[in-house]
Image (tube, rainbow over all chains, first blue to last red; front, side):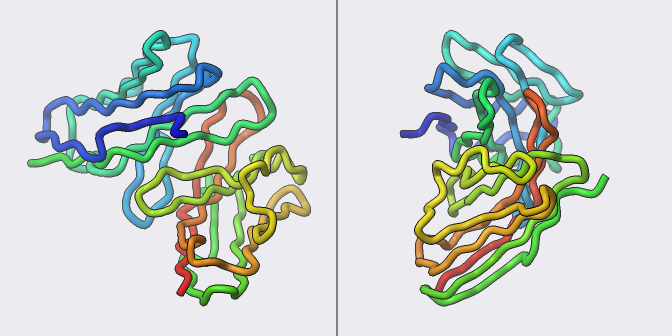
Length: 114
Length: 114
């Protein structure tokens, strides 16, 4: 039972355009959401997060949107750059208890084309 | 600030052998996590420590996996005996104590079982 779903295994975007990565979750207890970026042979790198009390969080070229009623979040990257080519993981957690291990999606491979 | 350190980077063993992985978290991070990432999947939590106590080990296959964090800093994860399905990348992460703190990952140990 996958509680965090990233339905697009891969996404190809032209350099300079907007990249939109999507993520859906099923567990209504999740209240903190994170995006990680992963290059081959490296560990995931934290990118941006959002708490369930917000619907938007912005950090430079990266913006995360949260739609709680739809249990959906998205990561927008504007403008997309060649260095953004990587696998992006969506993760979620219920932060109200002591156990706060992340539940990850399967990832989306973003390819930025010149 | 130095990141999460893991060793070894790669390990190849035969099934039924034993193997151990080491992790040194970011200085000052009280919480430490071990994740297993199978090819094509997102990381899956195995165990979470808060200082030297176990917070969550509900997904750890305890018949063959064990982990410890004796002095509340470094941690080791052991597999004995290894099975073919244990082939994966083992990731260590750490975070500060408190709500809504992002986890920071090491580069992982890639384990291949022959």
